[in-house]
Amino acid sequence: MPSTPRAVAALLHLAAGHGLAVRARGSGSKFHWGTGGKAHPDFLVIDTARLDGLWAHDGATAVVGAGTTVAAAQAALQRHGKRLTLDPPSPGATIGGVLAMNEAGPLRHQFGPPAGQAIRVDLVDPSGRSTAVEGWEGADGVITSALLPVEALPEARRWVVRPVTTLTETGEVINDVVAQEFALSGVEMDLPGAAGGALALLLEGPAAWVTASAGRLARQLGPRALIRDTAPAWWGRYPFGPSDVVLRLRVRSRDLHAMGFVLRDAVGTAVAVRGSAGAGVVHAVLPAGLSAPRIGDIVIGLKQVLMARGGQVMVLIAPPDLADQIEMARPRDLF
Image (cartoon, rainbow, N blue to C red; front, side, top):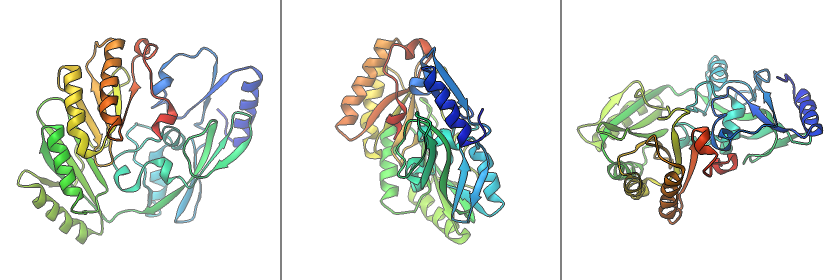
């Protein structure tokens, strides 16, 4: 548990001398993602919890320690009327973990993923050398801190929520709304695999503008749309747990229908899907009990459809016995 970049460098030198692989760990919320689900007998875990704190802040940017939870960084900035434009769904997510796995929540729609937001990422590479990386797209090593943009807290927030029942309907509504240029901060969908799905759209900004825009958006979405002062319970939350088999899909809203048809045909039943449909990143939870070959066939079928449409599919999470048998996502795949 190093408390300085120099201590991180010393640990990496030590690991190299003993032939140990190194894994950094923040809160552990994503430790089981992708290839992390596979056992590795010879690695050193570097816990970044002591690399925490708001190290600098000038009103436009902030240097934040890698082990700082996003919630703690937001609380510190809130006292200055500011925020990071990061809202990762993982409970307790740290700055280092968010950057290492490029984890984004609903605000991805307006501000993009963390990789595109980071001005500079400071890390110690596997040789033990401290370096600063601009234009972050992932790199080997242990993140120690990051220079991130901050912005003023929005004066008002409103969610406009409309029921949806299928991926086809969801895609059609999103395409129509986006074409109207509502300056949305988030466009999220939740289709739990049964009746009762919803599409939620977030507006942020000056109170008068938000009120007027929310009313106009609700009228555009029709009589079933509701304006809320608070987010739906599922907003910014993953639809899965660590024991699920989870697919991460990059898919444009106009191609949601094609993804849905293939997914239902391959699995044989409705599948729970949730995520940032407006930004083109969603997660699907496969039914329990599928074999590794069956999962592989589902992934191949989706790849054939999505690759032709500029999309992508990967297995993000699987129980260890399955993760050892199938191709799992690598951190680089998330950028």
